[in-house]
Image 1 (cartoon, rainbow, N blue to C red):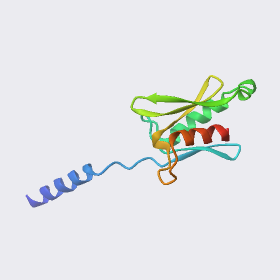
Image 2: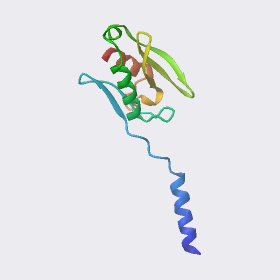
Image 3: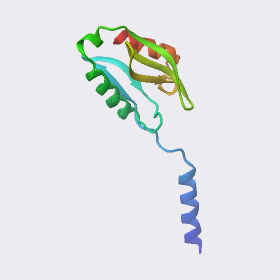
Image 4: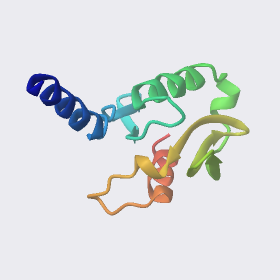
Length: 118
C-alpha cells in the first residue's frame, strides 16, 4: 500500500506546481524588433500572437501602410493593455503580461515603443 500512496503524493505535488509558461516571442519587421510578447492572451501563446500580428501586417495594402500607427487602451476579458493599430486596422495587443518586469517598463512604454518601431 505504500507504493500507491507514494505515487499519489508525487502526482499531487506535480499538479500543485504552476504550469510552465510559453516562451516569449518577438515580432520583427524588416529586421527590426517591434515587440516581444511574453503573455498568453485568451489561449494564444506568444508565438501564436506573433503569427497573427504578422498576418495582419502582411494583409495591409500600400495605402494602409502609410496611415498613422497608434495605440489605444484595451481590455480583453481580464487582460488590460493597448491595441496597436495602423489607421483603423487592429494589428496586435500589448498586455500587462508583455512587460519586462526587470526593465521597469510600463505597458504603455511597451506599446509606445512598438508604435515608434513600426
